[in-house]
Length: 283
Image (cartoon, rainbow, N blue to C red; front, side, top):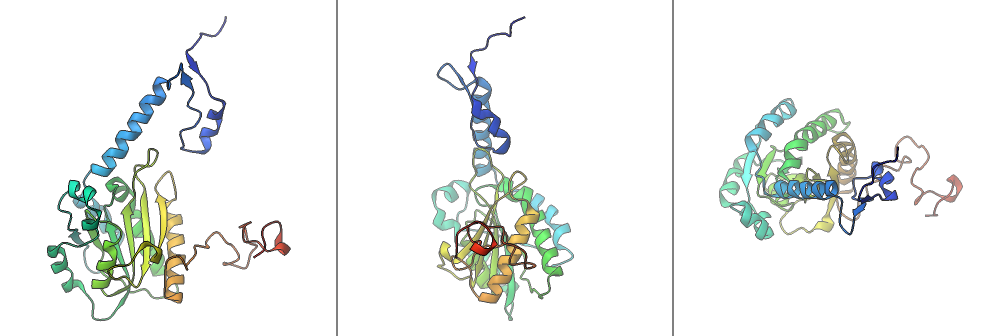
């Protein structure tokens, strides 16, 4: 019995979709997309839009954060807001999302420390509250556990949670909390295959007016991307190096995939492998 005919023309690239979330090998129906692929695109687009506009559930986030931080921090998180009073203003005025509101500034002096601390952790809703809601608690918990087990003592400022914030708002918070470095966990701009991505930004010597070349970034932290466990490992390496070198940014490279650094084993990175260790480019 012959197979039923279909108007959909398959694409041989479709076999590669098991390796990527990218929209490849979609096929066609006449000159258009097949109906299932079109509907899948519309659903992904709707999820990305929802991620941008959905407000952060602060109460739910606090409930999930409590088990992660209660063993490590003596004070509860401080909730702050940027100068962008609502979501529409936040999306239209990125500059306002980089500044604390006057009311939030008034909350921080009581939390400031006379002696500098090593680290301030700042959670910011950013452009994907979904990414923050889903991943920030496990990320914070993993980082605090790693810091507790680290050979170096780490002193911590109170944890802060910011609504309607951008990355640079962490600089002001870190400076006001007298922190030597600040880690900002922020919802990243959604993609069609990643509406729930969390980004991590590390800045040494936070202060107002810093630009992005002074930061290190770890991106795509989500269930379908970089795991929270791996992100913690990379972040801890960068923090140790920032503490040693007294800077972050373009001069500080993430070499966690370079196994020469740990244990003296062979270098897996073919771009930096020396000629006597195998094929690659000489340094």
